[in-house]
Image (cartoon, rainbow, N blue to C red):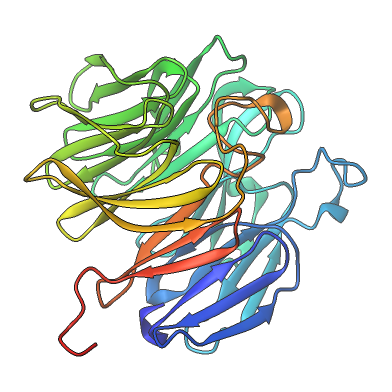
Length: 364
């Protein structure tokens, strides 16, 4: 929250911590449990999705599940609470602050994207965008991104079974319809895009799908084992291989850079003119910086913690979805770069937050 020179950190229960640049921490109690996603909208307003999956007893398909969206004023941290049925699985915000929500399905039904307008005060079920695909497997809708230039939503979901392809849907918001549907690899976990192409990481196919936005071409680029995260760095695109423990460029020279660690890679974050990789093994968290010009890694931080198993390919999650750690837990670390160019990394399992300063001024 640049307006406050601080970062908001949400746990997975009912707390919000405001961590100031000085390191001071103020903890606030949230009105509901299970925060899952946060996003910033126009004017710096923060949207926070909360609530459990509604297949859990005793909240089976009923309002007692307490799902909803909190709107947080960056000036005062005052909350506005908008209860909604079903768990939001991801968030996308357009230029006007309209919030788009793919949500869990209740048994077999058509996909849809719910819409919240006017700082989440107004929910009208009739305004949701109905999609033609019928789905039954729950928590498959993993990623939604809003393309401001094209006025499109890019929605990625896993298949109905592990052996079925994932599906990328390109949705024209104004026309409220799917303008392109592409089947990609198995168990897709991430996407990134630019003006010309869309890139999808296919966790169980060991490929990245490269989709030409102007034509029909779709290329499957081989990767290391279990590609998990994608990131743009200028006009270059990189994929982080979870089990393969490597960083790989898609296109260009297509080079693969082995990570100098023993463990599983978790997240890939742009930082300055390079990339930051987070990874875990049973005993520690590791944060590495990748220098693209030299093609080398440097260690930014290592911290000990008894993590145990941190692999994403064990299906050790509810509904047996690979490529994630648990229901709506698609990554163990999250990162944000603040207004002063510092990287903040939150680690889900240890409950720790790290502030990483790329280069400190003299005397700091």
